[in-house]
Image (tube, rainbow, N blue to C red; front, side):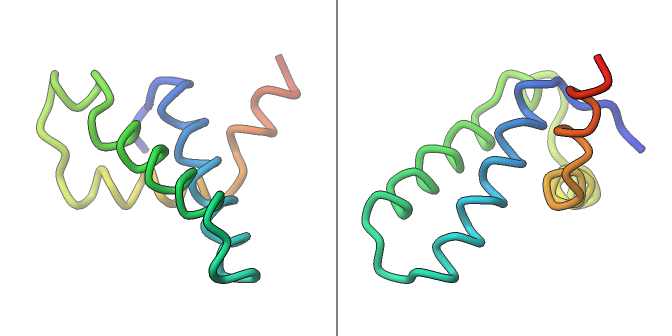
Length: 77
């Protein structure tokens, strides 16, 4: 598995949490706005300037965000 920068991993995890919240409570403007901001932060992150994101890289990042590994890694440090 790839090693992503901590801020990119955290942003993906926040995106996943926000997406789930929006699915549970559709129509919440503040959640939609947060999701847009997080999407832009993920897409335009400097990490992607060094290498073009492949579909596999995006999938690994999404899986990392869904698994909550970022939270567990932060707790161990």
